[in-house]
Length: 249
Image 1 (cartoon, rainbow, N blue to C red):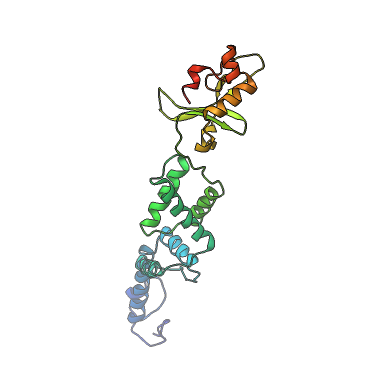
Image 2 (tube, rainbow, N blue to C red):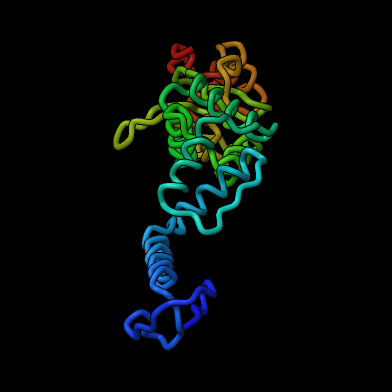
């Protein structure tokens, strides 16, 4: 009989064509080998994660790569080759790295808020040799557009900022953090110090009031800038401050 595969004559053996197609022994063995190879390829096919990671590496490096029908070993080899080449960096990527370097240098260990923890994790990733993703770069750039207000060391005391008196002090109980209270003065009433959130970040050492400024404030408002008391004693009214508070400047 004539083989339907190669066209060569052969001796009929039913066991060689169980699917009903007449083939010679060589063609039947080749067919079975092909099926085995296809099954092996399916079993060893690259995972979705491998393919996705490979495609991301290719996109970052602006190269075209065929990810169809890859085995696990083929995908691993391609990933290894791509990772050995440095991808081009965009201006945004370079700016993100600059942000990380700036925060690391200005704050030491990243501290002072949840976003500093995020930037710290980004810095650790870069230091470990792993590239930032596009999403991470975008996140770092958002922090750059909201610059951190640098804190400066302040001594506890009385400060004058744009005509407003603040008392800077440390919390006695709890956190022990430094904070500021604003002096509120109502006509004919004793002045009151009221906590103002974030005010301590805007105060600078040069805003510190000396005795001359304290006297000037008292003479204008009739209130002691140190304790908020209304000045009633003639000597204190004339001096702009009482003797007890004056000794504190």
